[in-house]
Image 1 (cartoon, rainbow, N blue to C red):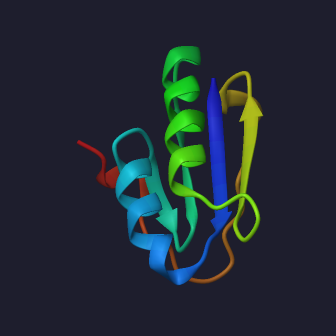
Image 2: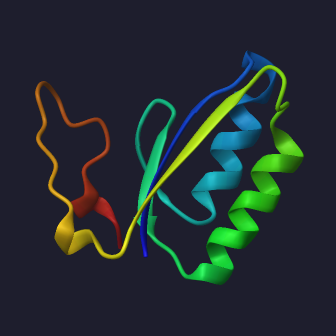
Length: 87
């Protein structure tokens, strides 16, 4: 499945969330990650984010799609992290 994860967390947890999500997804811009993951990987992501985030102060949203082919993006402005840079 293809996921987009956006988050708004307290400043002391931003680096932890970013480093954790980089293990599974591609960084797009501040507080936004996306990529293909398996169901098992998504389950690990959920568990990891619940361990890092404070559910009373932070917000994390996971958008799920069956596949990227049903997903279209439009950019206005500069591309902060081009998807073509993935090796």
